[in-house]
Image: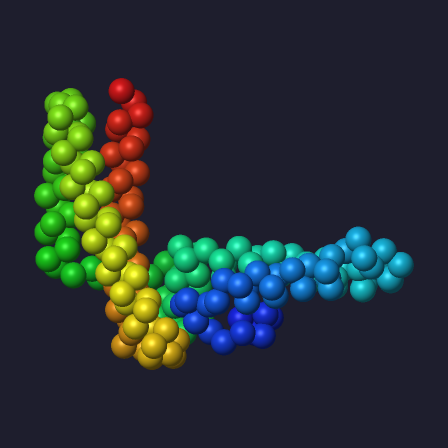
Amino acid sequence: MDFFSFYGIPVSLIPDPAQVRKKYIENSRLYHPDFHTGQSPEEQTEFLNRATLNTEAYQVLSNRERLIPYVLQLSGLLAEGEKYTLPQSFLLDMMDINEALMELEFDEDPARAQDLQAGIATKHAALTEELDRTLKESGEAGADNKTVLQAVKDVWYRRKYLLRIQERLDTFASRK
């Protein structure tokens, strides 16, 4: 059972946070194992499984970074271990950033590191803004619109790539 069905809400990249929280609380009261200690061991196990499912559902549906890949998987647009091809222009831009990061690893320069950090932050902010716009379009078009979902997937992969570069820069900076 998918998390949306479990909560009885429509599949969406922007589910109503109040509705998600309300369902989580309702299900917590309904399935919490402490409320079913008098049941048979099999029923207790079922309630524990439901309580676990409830927690997992809430963690995914209330966290955009986990929700996006979940919805993409549900829609059949994201496969585990998928090798997604990023746009060439984006990869060229990232190649410049990766080269600058490699240069920093061999020739420490705090001013260049700070400039690189600022450039990455700017690109991350632009991708986050693009993702916000695309998610808004998904809400208007419906979560089953493959064109919009493909656009969300593209932005999500670009942000993910940029975040890996950011992590490398953070690791580099923490060694200082």
